[in-house]
Image (tube, rainbow, N blue to C red; front, side):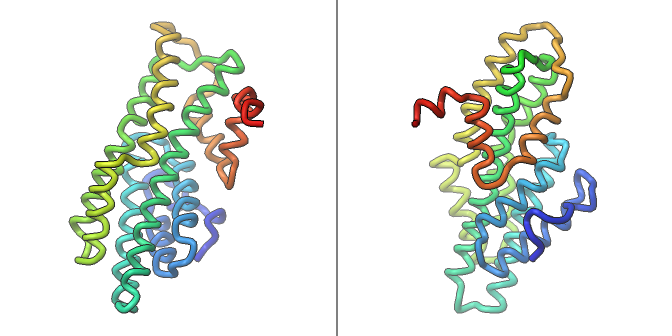
Length: 234
């Protein structure tokens, strides 16, 4: 499989995710380090998107379709290893969830970093990005349920179980969104009806942080933005 950090997703267009889909499928078929590889591939795709509702839909759909097809292909090849294949399916969904959570975290940190530089984004842009963020968890669950409905029996049951569990117990992205949306609401309140520009679009600021995502990159960014939190832990 191509390295999660190499190459371009979808030939450089914002909605062509066929390459991502194929890479996810190959990752599940290989069955090694699935959760981390799916996470990394998803992060790479997300940082190349416009991050609007439709772009997110394309990425989430491609990841889940690739995971579903990879599991079905692997089950046809090695039906006796069903439990291992289904674990790879669960790991793929977990990797996607974690990547979406990091997108939400990067959005919050981009906002905090700008505030630390006494920069403010326009109220219009804050509300637009907040609206897109608000839809991430419901979009994730919607596409997960849809993928379960179109999958073959064993994979379908696994995806249905994951969707049900996520609805009952929440998701990683949903947990992160609580903090992220709180930060957005506070910033929108402080901006009021003024149109104060930061000199850089919020989506570009988020993209810049997403490029730094690897290992503990977001943790180090959070410490840079909120150094007091680091000293509290030390």
